[in-house]
Image (cartoon, rainbow, N blue to C red; front, side, top):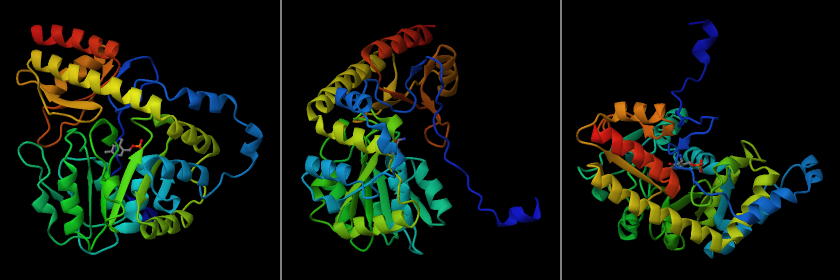
Length: 351
Ligand code: PMP
């Protein structure tokens, strides 16, 4: 090791899913298979490029106002960032600053560990039970903060709002972050509890239900005091996180509620059909409420199946980590993409 390397901040980075640039059936990073709202296309076509000379609005007012309108909250309760990864990372930096460990599930979004290590935040993972569910009592101990996704990733399991509320209620001495990247495919959002609990932050994204992973927009909703702390951290880091195109397109996407709801309906219908097909082929799967399904086959090794799928141009996600070695996470694509997947699986498990 070189002398200067001793002073370098070393981190074990998050490993994103592969983003192949050739044409494949891409069921590996939970993107939406449908295009964003036509209002987004129109906004891009009509965009005033002269505006790009100027810095964007650091307060992102148009987008925070559109989101506030959509969720019936005040603009001071909304914070936006470059995808929910950026928003979550800001939340870790801002809200998790205690000597006590933060708590999150052992099987969950693997970025949480990375941010905790990056920001030197102590953490303690809480084991999901045998059915891969969160055990709420595990979050009743002293802590420096709590974070969990609902639905959880990569399991897809949604916990009812009563349970989420209990975790928030029991932890009023710390900030509780509910990562709702997939909630639109699931059920009630913790957004309903925002005015009741000052320690709650709900984080969502445009990457999944709004088909805009490439535009990078995420947001947090919470008490104005928490949002103001988040803004202080953002302005101490990079005031202009959101680019002009994202701000303009984000507003258009939020305003198209009808398209958003139609898209959800299509994915949920395909998901439920895909579960039945998986069952028919002998897969075990968790009862996902997200836009992906976590599945294992008792007779076939997950890594081998993952490789075989890839060789045939079908990308799914595989981790091989403890407790989930035999599971694949399959994003719900279009009906046609899923039919191609099942055509392959039928041959594979039929052999
Ligand atoms: N939270 C969870 C649970 C996720 O699975 C993802 C997507 N990988 C994110 C947050 C981040 O998504 P984005 O940055 O695209 O908003």
